[in-house]
Length: 332
Figure 1 (cartoon, rainbow, N blue to C red):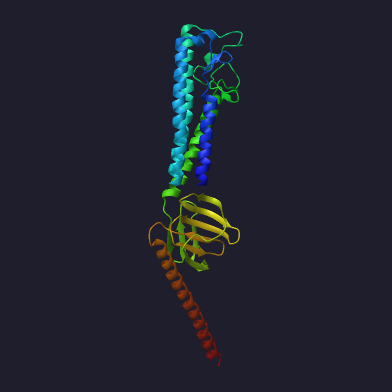
Figure 2 (cartoon, rainbow, N blue to C red):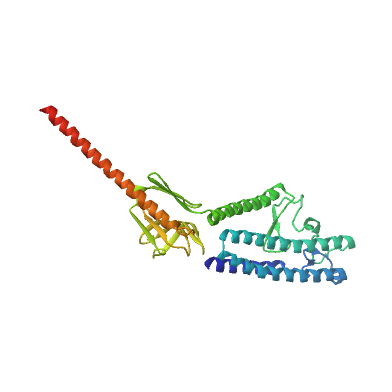
């Protein structure tokens, strides 16, 4: 529920900000319309009025649909978080691309119209007509040594000069870095959602395989073993891993009882509790009877190990007794 609420407010805020900044660029201000310098009489041309009306209709539909989508996508957070993250990223990409496409596309159409009709900027409002460097929606001026310039469409932003190599490297480097980071996150969360947890016994070792925080420990290190009907009571704090409405996986800490390694699907019981010297393991399975099977196998192997160690100690004691008897006989 927490994830749902956080993303719900975030998504609505993003749509509102985009609409406020880029959705209202259909008014003539400072000698510009859609970022193109044109004289005031050109605004009343039928082609320009049609362009403004068309942009207004498209933006209303676009932001209405994305407002609904921004809320709808949040409900996927109650399902697999990895699927939600992928869909959310696709929606956010569509929103950003759509915002730019609507504004830049309209900007380019008006610029082409200006060139075709030979309109000139009002010299009383415009110091310099540099629309040619903004014709594609972004700034590209090889004669300008600046890397960043004030943005044409939002006075609070800065735009990169794409005519400079550093501008291209910076822009595509940021985009590439974000893409790689999101791909890594997709892989991590897909593994967390779809890679099953397993408890494997190998001789005197126990291995818990998991996409996050796998552990291995010795049978002889187990101090206590229990089957619980639900998560232990306490204030658990996640220090590393994932905690959503489906699962708890990773490193956790409880103030009173210490460190935990948790591999628990919510809503499934029982939960196997394995107490170790340094931390406590909590694990369960979505497969019916699997957790109980792990418990029985651990009990059986611990019992067998204790039996072997007991007889080893007995044999050692017997060996010492025989050696002492031989030494006593030789001494006589």
